[in-house]
Amino acid sequence: MSVCVIGAGLSGLAAAHALRQRGVEFVCLEKAPDVGGIWRMPGAGERGPAYQALHLNSAKQLTGFADHPMADDMPLYPRHSDIAAYLRSFAEWAGLLPHLELRTEVLAARPEPDGRWLVTSRGADGVELERRFDHVVAASGHHNEPAMPEQLPPGADGFTGRILHSMDFMDGRDFAGQRVVVVGLGASGVDIAADLSRHAAQTLLSVRRGLHVIPKQLYGLSVDLIADAPWFTAKPLAEQRKWVEDALLVARGRMSDYGLPEPDHPVFASAVTISDEILSRIRHGAVLPKPEIASFDGGRVHFTDGSAAEADAVVYCTGFRMAFPFLPAGLPGAPQGPVELYRRIVAPGWPGLLFLGLIRPVGSITRLVEAQARWAAELVTGERVLPGTDVMRKEIEEHLGGIARRYGLSTGTSVQVDVGSYLRELQGA
Image (cartoon, rainbow, N blue to C red; front, side, top):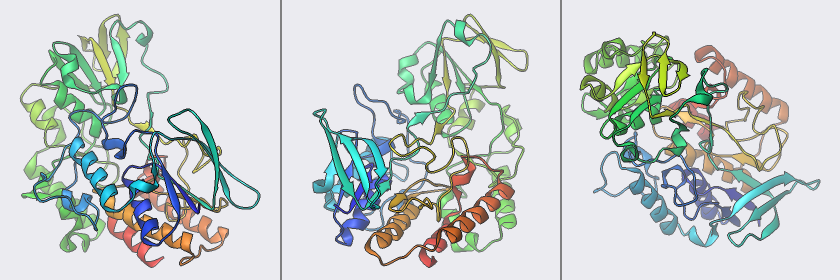
């Protein structure tokens, strides 16, 4: 076959759809029992980032595929099961099911001397299979390897409670009557803390660095619809920041009003956290903010402000590492280094290898992934030709230079993209 797509989440399905529209032969390999990616609730023996309280943070109008919008009767912010069912319906509608191989894990994808790729996979029956492809599309996402702190606070080894990562958290009801510390102010941290606060005896939220917490709506409009509106996108970045910061002061006040640290950076200079619930739960006394954990002592957790609390569990909501264990080492970048991809898709020097969904926008990712899929499909069919390696590396350097000036350079920031400008890059490149 011509193309092997790895992963049947949103990005993999977008790639499959674009390839099928162009009549390209392909197969889509997915190790889970069904499509859906991060929106599938893990079954017995599985491990994944979804949890019962998980809902969409972006409006359904911008999150559904352009050719197959979400149903009118779906809520504006559907829950995980709704999204998983929608992705399944898209795969059926787009005629992708015959191309899917579920319960099939990719063990390795390696380039061959003739320029093709040798893909080794293992099916549900345990049998390993080797196949050769002209192209490999890595669309397996970047939420599959939990990132715990390199070194836990002193005393963690002797903690009498449980220490777990958000990937191991499923439902706040599992912690009924317990005292729980949640670490992190990102998306999973605020979701899990809000969920726990309805079941746990006590919920503490440990925050090391301040982030901008943004409600899902401002002035009655979904924030990603505002970010997509022409009147907003026409503003220079400084004016966009001023507008959002003024709106946030009206909508929620300052972060310090809730006992949380003030961000040390302006809006759009780092990732934001979108949540309607966490600040309300803090105001109602259901979640108690705390600073960074300093140490553990038996069943007690000590914080850097000198306070301490008894705890039955600590949930680290500290994100994920980007991992592609089936690819040669160093792809798509050095461990813990920036992601180095031309147009955020192509690894220079590795012909035939394409990445989809390895981006982090403010707002919905769907339109960007669809544009990536069309761009990649045009490479496969020959409608589009890549520039020379030197040109691609220069573009990557310029992109990362801009990232460094705006955010500071790291693995996470290197995949940040602005929706409007990135779409223009893909449409005009």
